[in-house]
Length: 523
Image (cartoon, rainbow, N blue to C red; front, side, top):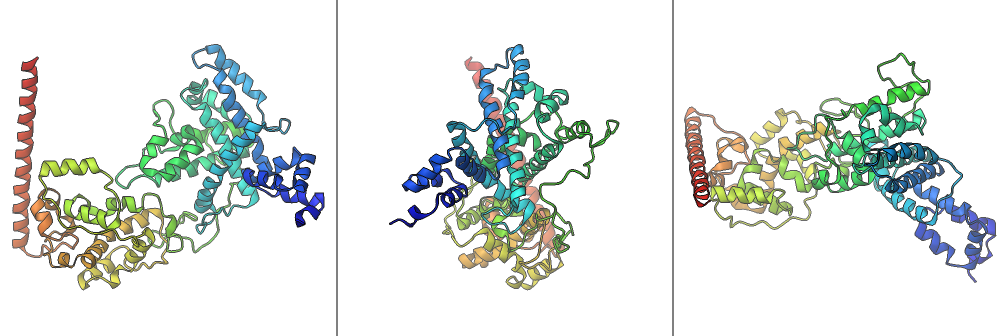
């Protein structure tokens, strides 16, 4: 006999109330008569508990349902009918975060779908704000989890308003209509939680930018608001497609800092700030979702910055900033990334595709590069974690001159346990990766070690434009222009290359003019 059939009904009800997944819940209910009978006796209470567990707390159910109901009602309103705007703003007041209207079957399913996305985002948030050692499970407390997830669902609601097809899209661009539309339903603490999560979302976008892409002057907060949490997760998981998921916003209409300034009228409305105040300040009654850790050891070894848990060493290299991935390491290879020969070998060894194949093909066609006959098989053991470890221990495996260069540099004393902030971590990778690559390629291809070193090292300009020079010399080395004769010889080669470049541009210009004349004559 199944022992579950002999358990008291009250015990079965409690067990079901701890389930946090809809599929598990349905499988349990349908597995035997006792659990099915317990569910039928409590058809409202048990599903509500399961939904609350999945969403991150009972208090998250109500903002989640309000968001779904507002989004569903918007399709009945047209942005092209002025009366619909007024009607919609008035009608959404009926969609409150109340406990009176239980979810329908469709809303129940939609909530579980969004709960899965929220759990993934919560893990990222825990890693960035709560505990730098967060793995695949969130370390937020029940209260922190509930506040974070409620803020996410409220942001989902805001992103439905800011959709260009929304009936109130234009109302989102002016503070006079945006503040009452967005925040009238919420307390000052809830609005502050939304802004805190929004700031974290912006940080996640910025740390996903490629190293050669400058961050927008006005930040990415607007893109996060307009894109919503679901698109942010897609952008984080596929940073190469960042702006395919997050919309481009015309900042002429609304400056990005205005979203933070929205807090001022909210605090004034709730009598937390005087109506006479014009500068935003956070009142003491307002608490952050997560209290910043008070740990004197959490500071960057290089610059002494203390960005909370956003510090990295070997304990959390598995969760590096998104700009530091195998697919993007080529961009940190300093001058060597433009060396056609070194570029190909580097990508082959890492086993990743060329991030700019069209640009490389154009370069090959214009410069008439020789075909590279050397091929390196990918090394599956070259993970980001291993590369970071070897970068920290590099001074023990390089030659005397290179070891001296590393010792005198900014990161001369680091170890794999050294804590670095994002900026210093990226600096360290850029300053050492080219030297690490020298050791890797020589170990894989001993013939590379027999090549003469270029006198200007990895900073050489000729390696970009002169194929013979790039192939003949090793450029993953230090500058060695010690004598006047060597410097003069290098300047001569550089001058010849610049002349060739000018002639090539003139020739292409004449060809373009001739083609244009031919087309005009044909017409």
